[in-house]
Length: 396
Ligand SMILES: *Cc1c(COP(=O)(O)O)cnc(C)c1O
Image (cartoon, rainbow, N blue to C red):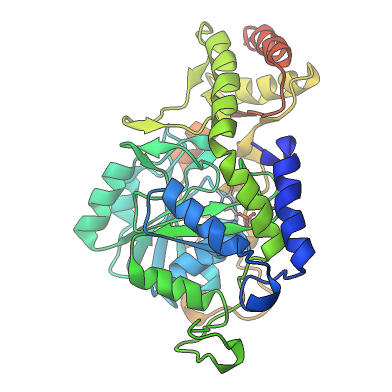
């Protein structure tokens, strides 16, 4: 991460194709487009790469999550289980469809703790939405078993782990629906964009219509199309899709670079007894976008994080205090600070997150440091970084 580090001729060529025809919209204008259908082509490439029947491109990862929930018929008063460690997009998308975000602890995988998920299931629960944070995956086999037992949907947020696998399957393709983000800082980027993948024909049809005002996309005249149900505009533009088309061709190259750089850092830290790596579920392979490890306690993690940045090791994150990624700082959610009135179901059903006990999550997050793995580092830079990290961390 991030794919923008290696922008080049391939991206320029793709964008030029679109600018030369001047058709920036993914639908219609057939005669003017010189045969360029960038969004459609990227959907084909993505579904092939992810080994699913369908892909639907949308305007962001957040819209992908929202459209996934809407396409599966999740709405007002339904409960969706999500982790305490994620990006704010998880609860934003749940609330956007009128559903209730039910926050559940994480464990040493830094993703949903399966037995805590099972405890949180009620008769209103409709879906479990694990987030494959920082390059590695949730315990998908266990979560799928819980979903099967309680008749719930499994919706994977693979925005930070594109290209990782579980039981040999691409992350995102294991559940009923999987979501990706192609925002500017993700492993592959469109500038802004996102996608969902699924094997389910009906979810694909719903996603296709819903993300474009409910348009049924039949025939050649957009103005004459009917609207089988209400939708919204979550479309991606051809310009963004064009960048993504160049980047997806390079996904495997990027993954290889991430793995190489990650491995140098990991091997350097392996000798330090105070550093314990985050657990990757059996049968899983990370996408290597971050190296994540635990320090012996919260105080040491905090001080080590500070010392790393003071010694020039940039791109290290201490998520426990982060505004975007951890429940500690989500007061706007806890207090439901919305501009307008929210659906009554959310007001009534949202648990009091000021009072709920998340000490299990705090135990892990308080000790976690994550290091962003960059694509643009030279071999020498990675070696110097590894050496510096060892020098700093061995003092704790
Ligand atoms: C980036 C991200 C999103 C949202 O993607 P956007 O394209 O920025 O809307 C959702 N979930 C996770 C885990 C992310 O990292």
